[in-house]
Image (cartoon, rainbow over all chains, first blue to last red; front, side, top):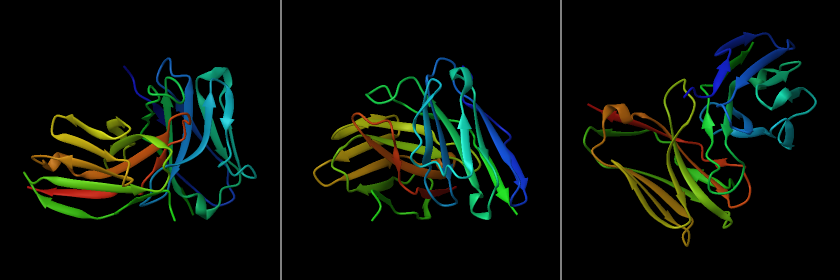
Length: 116
Length: 111
């Protein structure tokens, strides 16, 4: 079974440029998460989707970050414009269902973003 | 104060040693406790998943949860160089899907 797929794996951009990350979750997983992981820290949730609906985006900096999950499968996370402090690893995860004992999240390899 | 505290290490032990990794937390509502392993330049991989208090064993790995002390542990027996990675504790309450992660402990097993 294929795991969570993310692309690109690495991205280097200059500040004020836009950037987008793509995620394809495990087949059949309705819940999709975007996390940001700063160096030496654990992942922090940015947004959670149940199918195509964003049900928790309280930690997403909405002035520059946006996300979408059209058709409830693939998802894209965008930053426009990027700032130096956005340099981090952006992780996508998916799970069968949110909450309850079966809510096990599986992570993709991440996209390492460097903003110069 | 962070909800989940974890010593960042690094922790270096010889091959074959028993490793003990720990986290403390402040939110008494947490019911599900997890340990993730993260290799360099990879995403976190779920190792152990425990509900409420008690022990859970899986091969060389044992997870312990003490809710009265708000303290969780991961023990690795007969440690191998391939166990060298960052270990993240994580937890959530019974209804919410949001996981709170510790900052991770970097572990190195010397051959």
